[in-house]
Length: 265
Image (cartoon, rainbow, N blue to C red):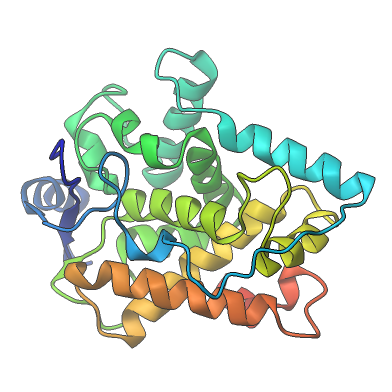
């Protein structure tokens, strides 16, 4: 990874007809370095830059909202720790959710590139999203396994030759949502943050569910825009705008009411 600019990898789409051994070989070998920044050091993804239209407002929170926000912010503050046994186990769980029956040779292994990490050590990519980004991926895998596999293997739609890397994209989505919802402030100061807090008070897993919706929406935007890997930032920006529009709809009382929720299988 470029120490100054950041970097990402673009994964060449592999024919669904290939067997697993051929598929793994092709995915690992046909990876190219890109020039735009994605996550971690040197992050400059346009999707997470604050917009002038983000009103800086003050909202009063109910005790329930305060408690839910505190728990979520505590999760956000946890960095991925490669020496933590619980974090190691979560990473192993993610591997076996993605590749059931395929033995993982190590937490540092060339195998991880098959999932769309930038290198053989996924821990370096978690710097942009922390441990919660791994939790988000696991939530998607466990609660919407068909959507998880569809996103991982790019099974839907007319795809470009060079696709976004699944895992790194997932970490970007976590980071984008944290910024969009202003979740690192003591109290959200934006309309998006206030709207989300109302939904958060209904279920503590609201952030994880919104993550699943956002990932599927991003992939749909990718297909609609006939995007390739250099278009990722543009797609993320479009995804954020659509999420904001849906969250502000008058009849949204829970995340399941969002139009994009229907994209989850």
